[in-house]
Structure formats: C-alpha cells, structure tokens
Image 1 (cartoon, rainbow, N blue to C red):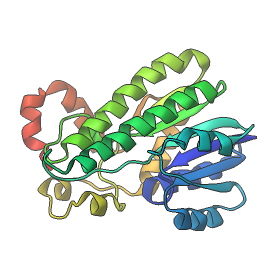
Image 2 (cartoon, rainbow, N blue to C red):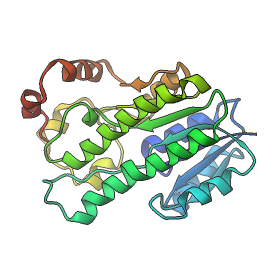
Image 3 (cartoon, one colour):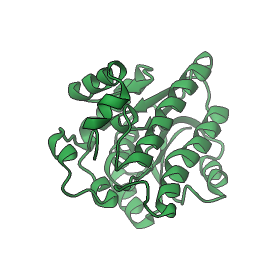
Image 4 (cartoon, helix red, strand yellow):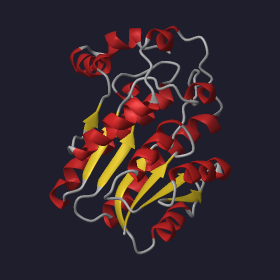
Length: 246
C-alpha cells in the first residue's frame, strides 16, 4: 500500500493538503499528524476510510519512531511538512518562543526529511511548506523568516541530492493564507500584512500539489509573490528589508 504523511494536518493548509491527497487514486492511506487529536479525528471522519490519525508532538524524542510505526510496512509515497508557527515581535521575545520556532520549523522538519530520504522509493515526493518570508529578512518576524529561509535552502539542496533516485522535494512559498496562523503569531494590525493579497488554503494546496507532481523545487503561488521572489534576487537585502517589516 502507498501511504502519505501530512504534518500540521489539524487545520488550515495542512488539512486541505491532506484532504486533496486522500482523493488521489495512487494513495491508499493518509496519516494525519498533529498534536490536537480531537481535531484530527474530526478531519479523518470527513476524509473517510483512507485517513488515519497520529496525535504527536513533533518536537518529542520519540517522534520518528512513532511515525515509522504508523507507516509500518507500507510504502511512503508523499510526505508533507506543514507543521510550523511564527511569533510576531522583536528578537527579544522569550527564548522558549524563539527556540520553539527553530525546533519545530527547522529541527523537526529536518528529521522528517532525512527519514523520508532513507524510506522513500523511486517516485516519492516531499513537500515542505516555507513562506515568502524566506526570500527577504523580515523584521519583527525575524526568527520565523530565518526558519523559512532554512526550509527553502534545505529543500533545494535535497531536491538536487535525491534527483538521481527519482525523489522530488518541493518548497512551497506562499504569501499570507487565511488560517489561524495570524492569531497564533499575534498579528493584528500590521500594515504589511493588511496590504498583501491573502490566499485561501484551497488555492495554495492545489498549486502546491500540482508543482510537486511536475517535480518543481519551488512553488510560489500567485503572480504577485512570484514577482516578489524575482525582486528579492535583484534588490539587495539592505534596501529591500526597509519594506518587509511586519
């Protein structure tokens, strides 16, 4: 049987990606991974027989062992790293918040990517959710942006490393998505985010899966953010950063 795993599947983009992956004829089972078991059970009930639930803290020491046990003898075909969070504020935020972002957004994701690289057969796909914050440093979201820059860089390098084995790695770099991210991050009245085009989880998920199927290493949904990505390569950070403060 071919199985997919989706972290951060209890809400927002992760939930939508899990729903769409479950509709694929090539996938027999989707493992929904997040901490909130009750929400996962609700989503699994909506998806149907293909869904199974793994309530899990991705920063726990037994995280990989539990994922491996859930996969069992099945073939890992798709892995989506969507779990992550941000906190708005200066770098003087409490250490547990700063380090928590690094632990979940970078360390846990890296462990899962390495596991997938050793577990996946030819034709496997890894989808890592980054952000447009990966392109240019973002004051007041400095650590969050840095973690997403890490995700982008890691994804590109792994895509090159695994290409010979037929495994693709796609970094998805969306702009703001209408999810609970803003409430968790403490973002309320931000001129930057208020001025940007917001997208729906459905819009981003559709384009992310399409890009992964085509084997692209970066997916930037929406023409505006594609332009932003190009400009970030042309304009020096010391200039561009004056316009990215959250």
